[in-house]
Amino acid sequence: MIGWGYLVYVAITYGQRIRSGDGEAWGPAALAGLGAVACLFVGFILVARLLRMLGIVEPSHPRPTPSGPVGGHRDRSGHR
Image (tube, rainbow, N blue to C red; front, side, top):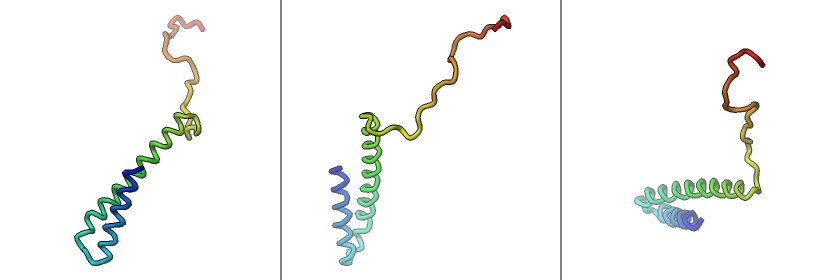
């Protein structure tokens, strides 16, 4: 999360430069903004995984359980 905070700080700093008339600051501001969004997205994914690993949150879609036995051989004699 430190990286996210730094990227937000950089985006704000370049945004201030853009408002003061520095047109060359658009590129770094856009990259810092996109980097901050990506970093926050990955952070949310990691927090969600951690909460599931700790058992605090249940998965939204439980894993399906097999309805019958899996594997084995079929009885070809016709008897049940």
